[in-house]
Image 1 (cartoon, helix red, strand yellow):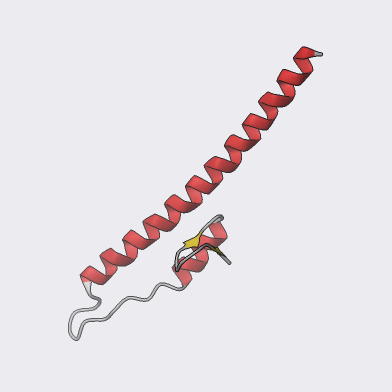
Image 2: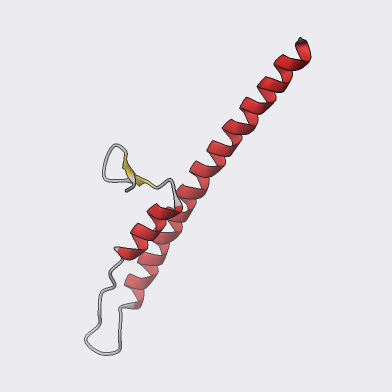
Length: 79
């Protein structure tokens, strides 16, 4: 489940959050001819934002791991 932040926005952190988001997607139907194209575009934009959120969270996590490793190496070199 995505963790909540202030306001109505959620922070998506994992691929499971993306899967949950996709499972919850609903498309507005047109009377004739399938789904409303504008609604599909809005849904795809929202999905792209979810992917970006997950990417940014994972990038921050891995950067923190790299920074921690660099700090340990630096301490070990100093003796």
